[in-house]
Length: 151
Image (cartoon, rainbow, N blue to C red; front, side, top):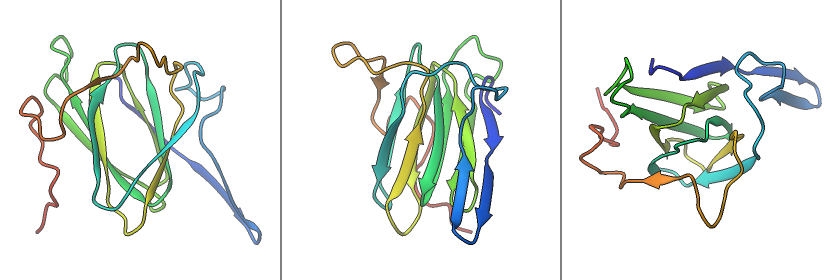
């Protein structure tokens, strides 16, 4: 696991009316602080990546569909420099993945319908000077192939 990445198995409470899933609580071991909450989506087969933040820590949860979240540690002083982590998360694997600052991340919708992602980052988005640094999803800086791995 990339240094600083944390995973929380989410608690799902079901009854005859439906279900409730706790995502992030301020008494969780991995809770740092609240910045904002936003929802982003991706259509089937679409890749959104790569980017990283210098200050912000992300807390990703998939509310609908399935997503392949991929992380790449480009931090030269990290003990996990160069490592890649893949997480298949969503309806069939309800987890929260906490992504440290300076770790590249991107995701691909791997379900047959739109993937809905909820993020609770530690910082608010600053429109005039965003803490977001991007490279293309096929960048040679990151040794990763977004294709399906058959076999």
